[in-house]
Each structure stands twice: as C-alpha cells, then as structure tokens.
Image 1 (cartoon, helix red, strand yellow):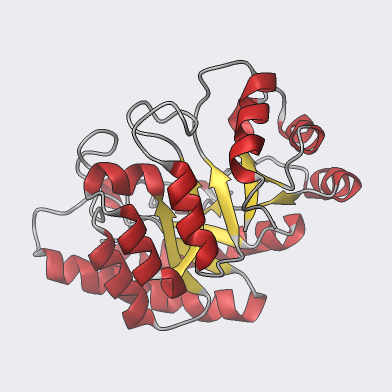
Image 2: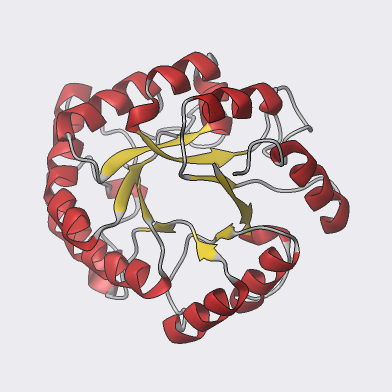
Length: 265
C-alpha cells in the first residue's frame, strides 16, 4: 500500500507541490489536471524528489474536443465517444510524460431520454474503445463512481455494484475501479465488505472523511479498520488523499503519517 498526498494541501504552485509532498514524507501526490503543465520540468522535479504523480483526469488541449467532455454530455452519450477517444490519447501522452500510472474516467450525468441499461451499455462500449490504448501504453483506466446525495446530484454512476459489473464486462487488467471511500460511504456504506469482496477490480482509492470531505479522523469513518482490511487483501497500488484539511499542514501530515505508518509498505 502506497499513500499519496492531496495536491491542494500545500498552497503552492504545481511544481513546488511535488517538492512539498516529498518534504512531508509522501512518495506520491494527487494532482488531477495536466493542461498547461511543463512535462519536462515536472518530471525532473519528481525524479529529484523521488515522488510520483498518481492520477490524471481525461482532458484535451483541443477546444473542440474539450467542449464535448463535460458531464452535461458525458460518456453516457454515444456521440461523445470519439471526443473521449481523442482526449484519452492526449491524456495517455501526458501520463507517460509524467510517469503517472492512472487515468480517471467519469461517466457524466444521467440522461432522461433513454433507460439506465442503455447508458450502462454506452459507457462500457466507450471504455472498451479506450481499453486497447491503455493496454498498449501500460496505464490504467480507473472508473469513478460518485455520490449523488451531497456532491454530484445527477451523476450517472453512484453505486459500486453497477461499477464493478462494468469492470467485469470490460474484463481488462488495465480497466479497474477508483473506489472513493468518501463517496461510497455516503452512497451505500458497507465499506469493508464491498472493498474486500471486489479488491481484484479496484485499481486506486481516494480518501476523505464523512461529513465534510476533510482528512481521516474528522468524521465517522474508522480509517484504521478500513486500511487494515485493505492491507490484508495484499493490495499494493496507490491510496490517494483527496480531501481538504481541518488543521495546519504540519499537524495534518503528522496525524496522517501516524495513521498510515502501520500499513505503508
């Protein structure tokens, strides 16, 4: 198990975030956007500080492509497929340049004109189009369910059972689930059972507490037990803090390392 810091914790620019994350004892940092990044500069700083960029989101430098990616007309629409393929190819190049192993895919908002089963089929078919690109380039697509009760009303994919079914249908080692512990606690709870029963389908975790989406220890989730359960499965990929913070950076990092030191191999 490897833990990456939330990029927003440090209050510095993109490049200095790598430095700060390393200074505070993390081996990875989660900064999802890549547009406008000087890849050579970023990679040099990461290598100097022995730190990894752990996930990117699908974006495009082409304005005509980018306008077809928003959730209002997302992956649940057939006519967005070519835009997602083009944007995914661009994002793969960014991931390769940055040494980033994961690319996050989201479904967009639910449609009202066709049934959910049709939207499910469209998302799976689009991900199957992205799959060979991911396999050829040794990156992982991580599909993210999000809660619709608090943060993302209208989003198509909320429940983990449907998300895991999509991953099974695609059936590729390069397409797995991003299990966001915050979102799934709000959506359905039953975290440890859902995680451990499906760990072979999970490629990445996001970490935040409920309510408030701040660091573990500020809410209701027993992260010590959750981390222990994940560790017992043999999971060896990244768990990324994607949360705000309730205290200054020094006590925050001290508290987080006290929590994860038992599990960080």
